[in-house]
Length: 130
Image (cartoon, rainbow, N blue to C red):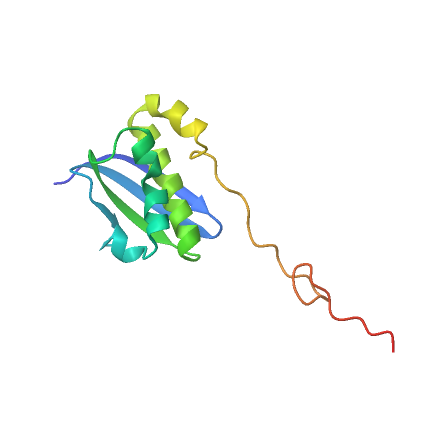
């Protein structure tokens, strides 16, 4: 039986990611797929790996991520947040370095709702004087 060493929940926009750290050699699986297969953009893969590089945990643990909701950018942000929280759950000494880099802060920016009588959240219908 495989034992989870630590877990963390990450959120960004409307995405949420459940992250599990296991003993291993550095494999990252997202929804059952390899990370490079799930996130086609290399920038997102490096963004997700940042907490591991900062805390010197790159290649030490296998990471299993279940992510749902939102688009791929929001999901990548949720994975980053979840990995950071899991690393703190594993070892509390990781907190200062992760906090200094801003990985433990949940990015609270969400899409503003559309208001009635308007075309969008802030966009108004075109005004016609005549």
